[in-house]
Amino acid sequence: MPDIAVTVNGEPRALAGAASHTTALDWLRDIGLSGSKEGCAEGECGACAMLLATPTVEGGTAWTPVNACLVPAYALVGQEVVTSEGLGSPEELHPVQQKLAEAGGSQCGYCTPGFACSMAGEYYRPGRTQADEPAEPAVRDDHEDGCPAQGAEHGAENGAEHGPNGFDLHALSGNLCRCTGYRPIRDAAYALGAPEHDDPLQQRLNRPAPPAVATDVTIDDGRFIRPATLAETLRMLRDEPDALLVAGSTDWGVEVNIRGRRASLVIAIEQLPELRTLDVTDDMVEIGAALSLSEVEQRLNGTVPLLAQLFPQFASRLIRNRGTFGGNLGTGSPIGDTPPALLALGARLVLASADGERDVDLAEYFTGYRQTVRRPDELIRAVRIPLPLARTTAFHKIAKRRFDDISSVAVAFALDIEDDVVTAAKIGLGGVAATPLRAHATEQALIGRPWNIQTVKQASEILGSEGTPMSDHRASAEYRTLMLNTALLKLHSTTRHPHADRSESKEVPV
Image 1 (cartoon, rainbow, N blue to C red):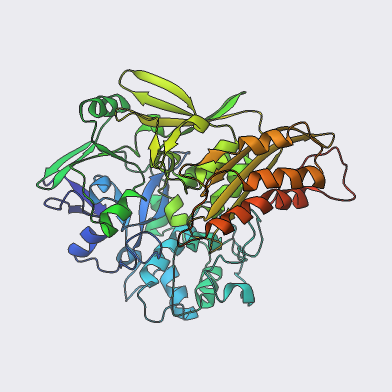
Image 2 (spheres, rainbow, N blue to C red):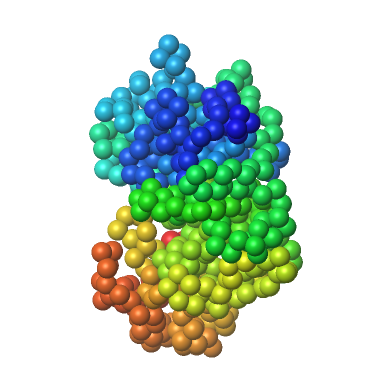
C-alpha cells in the first residue's frame, strides 16, 4: 500500500503494514522518530505532542499541537505532521528550541520534545501580539509549583497567563515536567519573537491544509475507514451497526492504550464537512459534532459566555485540539464536562441516520450509565443551542486540580433575573448520578422567587438532594452533596453587588 502515507517533517512516509489500532506515536517511533515520548499513554503529560496541519476558516493552515499517543495512525493518511525532529537540528536549532536551551528549560529532556511542539504551535499562532523587543519576564510565585498556566485568569487578554510577546501559557497546558519547576519553560516562551518571513513552517501557513483523504485499510486485526461523505458513513452504520465511530479519539485512544481494547471496524468522522459546520441564526447556534473544542472556542469567540467559561476548564489545550462535542456526548459518560453546560443552555441534538434526522432534547438523551437514546445506526450530527441566551451564567467545576483534570462535580447555571426576580432557570449537573441531569426541582424552587439569600438557601437544600452521588477515588458521596449544597450560594455571592443596580442581571465570572 505505497499510497497509504503521511507527510512527516516534509517527507512522505508509508504507513503500509502498521496494525489498524496503531497510534501515531507508536508509528512515529517505529520509523525512527523517537523524539516523541510516551509518558502516560492517555493524553495527560504531553510528552508525545506533535504538530498537525489543520485548516483555518480563512482557507489557510494552522500548526495544531495534538497528542500523538491518542491519534490513530491511519487517521493521518494524506495529512502533514511535524515532530520535534522537524523543528530544527542540533546544528541549527528552531527558535523555540534555542530559547528553551538558553533559559535552561530542559533537564532530563524527556518532556522537552512535547513542550517544544506545543510551544511552536503558539509561536506560529496568527495574531499573537508581538512586542518590539520581548521583555525579560518577571518572576511570579504562582507559576513555580504548577503547570505553566496555573494561576491564570480565564479570558484575560493580557492577564497573568500572557507574556509581553503575546504568548498564551494555556497553549502549554497538558504538558507536564517534573524537573524544571516550569519557570524556565515560561521564560523561554516569553522570550520568543516573531517567526522570520522565510521560516518554512511560517510560509506553510499561507497554503490550504491537506484535504481529507478517503481511506479503507484492512489489516489482520481489523479495518479502518474514512468515508468520503456523511451519506456513505450513515449507510455504513446501517449495514455495520457494531462499527466504532471515532472523531478526536481522546477517549477511544485511552481505551486502546491503557485497556488494550480493539475494534474490528473503526470509522473516522472528524473530517466530514457536514459535521464541521458552525452556524448562528436568529433563534439558535448550531455546532457541528466533529468540530474540535478549540475550533468552537475560537469561532464563537465568547458569544456563548457559559461555554467560554467551560472551555479553559476542559482537560488541556492538547485535548481540546482534538476532542469534540459529539465525542463527549457520544460516550454517555456521567462525568463529561460539556453535558452540564449544554443542559443548562437547553441544548438539543441532531441525530442522523440513513433514514433521516431527528431532533432530541439533551435532557432526554441520557437513559442510564453510558446509555443514550442514540441508536447504533445513528450519529450525532450537531448540537443546537436555542437563542436568546440566559444573561446570568456560571460553570462550576470541582476537581483535584484546577486544570487538566476530571471533575468530581460539575454544575452549570443559566438564569434570567428581572427586577430581582428569577424568571427562568436551567441547571445542569455532572458527576452526581449515573447520567448528567437537569436539576428540575431546584429550577422550580427558583422560578418566580426573589433572587435573595433566603431563596438561595432554600433552593440550595433542594439542589443538595438532586442526583444520587456515590463515593469513589475522586470524592465521597458526602463531599459531592456538599458541593451541590454550596454551588448556588457561590453563584449568588458573585451576582450580588451592594452598590449595583438591583434590576440588572450579570454574567458570572468563574
